[in-house]
Length: 188
Image (cartoon, rainbow, N blue to C red):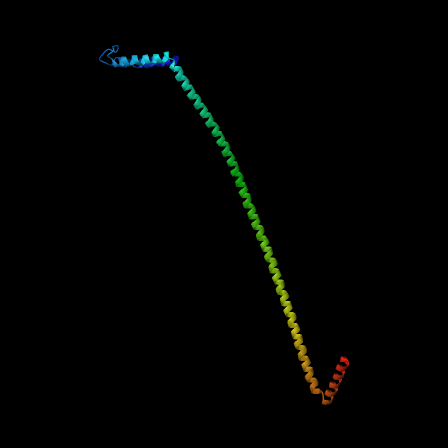
């Protein structure tokens, strides 16, 4: 309250240089500055008498309380936003770690799959080589049999030719009779 009256006194005295500036005397009702000053003082007096300053101060205090409440609410929202941001940052870091783990696992699995494919290829090549060796051995055995059979056939033919040249007609007849007797003995 004392501040209000001191501010009012300062405002009134601040207009004092203007009091000496005019041609007319300041303290007459013809001077507009004097009439305005009187009206202002009456207005301020009415405000003081009606205790309007209490209402103004109460309104200002309630406005200050409202602003404090809004600031506190904003501070709480800010803290909540910080907490949420920290949670998202933590989740982001966890997701980065998890994605790095997934990538590492995928690389390891790809490496293992490549090693398994190499081993499978080596096994397949070994099987094919063994199959080829078996086919070669079978072909060699067949060739040896064929050569043997051909040699036997040539030897039998050569022996037959040689016997035919050395045998006489009487030897032929005797051999034929012996063969017929042998077949007859085996059939009965």
